[in-house]
Image (tube, rainbow, N blue to C red; front, side, top):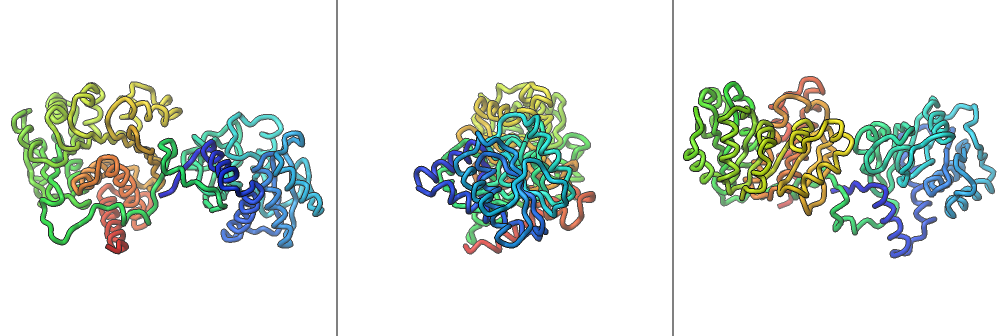
Amino acid sequence: MRDLPEGKWMQKADAHTIQEIGIPSVVLMEHAAQKTVEVMEQEGIDCSCVLVVCGSGNNGGDGFAAARLFAWEGKRVHVVFGGKESSLSPECRLQKQIVENLGIPVFYDIPDESYTVVVDAVFGVGLSREVSGGNAALLKKMNGLSCTKVAVDIPSGICSATGKVLGCAFCADLTVAFQCEKLGTVFSPGREYAGKVRAVDIGIDTAFYQECKEICFTLEKKDLPALLPARKENSHKGTYGKVLMVTGSRGMAGAAYLSAKAAYICGAGLVQIYTEESNRAILQQLLPEAVISVYGQYDPERLKTLLEWADVVCIGCGLGRNEVSEKLLEGTLQNAHAPCVIDADGINLLARHLELLDKTSASVILTPHMREMTRLLGCSMEELQEHRFERLMEFSDRYPAVCALKDARTIVAQRGKRTFVNTAGNQAMAKAGSGDVLAGVAAGLLAGGKDPYDSTVLGVYLHACGGDAARQKYGSYSVLAQDLIEGIQACLKEAEEQNPS
């Protein structure tokens, strides 16, 4: 697991390390400079002629210290000071004085020379205002240089909390992030401005992040073995849960198939698909392992019987938005006691009847994409894109549900839990049926005994890892939703083989 703090939390960890642990700020600065130089060399960057551009805060101090280390290695180094003498932090003033004492050239504008790399140490994670005037002109000049570009901790001009460009920003090929990658380099456009991000340990104590619900986190592949539901040797299909899939209206057998198969490959013991009657034959052929039950009209007693049978319910994939579909959703939420995953058309129908979330006795997982989320919130796409965290948190505080807001960076939120931000996955997954697979993955993990929040977090990450495996095999253009299932299978096998138990 990796923490993804925004700037204010990184500053709190920095202050805690200095004041409570007792490590002086200048020591952390030396570590930061050393790691910056090491990573640049590890990445094979030509550091024979280095330009370091420094501000007047501690980020600038990191830059001055790095310039000194490059000079000690015999590199040709120029430093540009883009801050104000009156604004120098004590540590930055010290590092600047050392550089000047060593005779390393310090300029106040970028010299008209050629460099192999420019290092951005102008602003740190605390930047909250728009970059303008001379600072904006400096960043534009840096971007215009024909050389490799490296950012110290975060690209100057990128908001550490949202990834927004604050007027103007440095566009890096590599960002050396201290202790943790910042949330702002996970989301676009900060993600693109950061380039490749390498997080390095410089000695800042972040242990208290684990207890802080406001700090986002992400997963890594090494986390998978410990997170998967246990598979006991002495077990049978009933051990791993019965999943009811209320999916597939007329002509939408594919959505029912993809979600049901995904539930099976993620460990569910038995899957029953309750679908429109015209889908029976094709589903029996596509997925003979599933039990197929069908409806023509809404049958409340039949639905109640199926809900009593189920340990997990998944509703909405290809369900349609007609009158029968609407009654199926209402009947499910009114009568289900097992956890429910609601996806796609189920979410669109739910947007008309949000009061059902307050009345249901079932634990609910919602998996909306951005457009579906605007219907749940009653807001515009522009509003959601601009304030996705705020709107998602408001929704999670209002309704007792786990919500996975799907996008290039999917966010999982639940009241009282830390927010998960998925950093795996890729553009190849932007295909019809991908969401059906995710709904089935979450249902399968629920059936294996994971709670709703953990099933959603693990499901989102596992789904994305399957997408990465599929792209590696088929490329970015040719991945289909069923290829995600194949990729998930490979990831599960790999994780199982790594699990010592």
